[in-house]
Length: 299
Image (cartoon, rainbow, N blue to C red; front, side):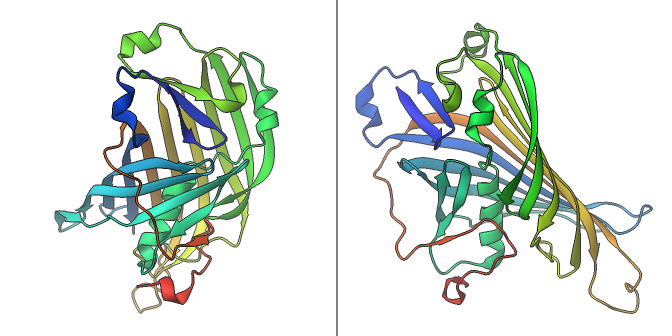
């Protein structure tokens, strides 16, 4: 049975022994790890905050995924404190796609702004943002590089794409005991491939001025992502920069080093157990975390 993981881009051929169990369609489970790292001085300890969660998604239409987070934990490690706490992150949202990638999010009010921005960054992991015709022109084994503008969670960026395609060993699926095979839709007629898409972004227009969980002013630095597709789907994004804290006597000349690392890995494809929920009064918002959302949506 074929299912669509990312509209217009990625599907999976799933081994199904009993189709009656798939009445409500597939459910995709991802491991999500999002880490913030702050450092005030080379001599001081690093402070980190990590969100560990599971992302559950289901196809809703040809161009939509319905998703929500569950089993979320925040781990704080600092100079004088190490804490772990569970958090409620059951908010539902939809990711809307077009031929170039993620068009935006559909969220349900009321929502906390910091949660909305996390959802934007999660959706950005699915944003390939590539001209599919350029992918199709890659040879069976080879490398292709080009530059294009990309709408992302950090603004509209000039993005350097490096796409590498290699032949995948045909016995790898059996060796890893995986019950599905990934299919890159623009390459559906070709042999199984090991596909890597690296994106390095520069000169972002309308970037965010602030960092999540901090009131300091942000100066963007490195912003890179890598999508790896073979028998697995794995995405990693790394963003770093400098943060100037709010003005005070002891911080006027101090800049904080900041790094954000997000990892998203497909864990399983299973049959859903109930009907697909609906989002009422939802509204489409774009990916850029510097873009405001309607005031009636903010909790």
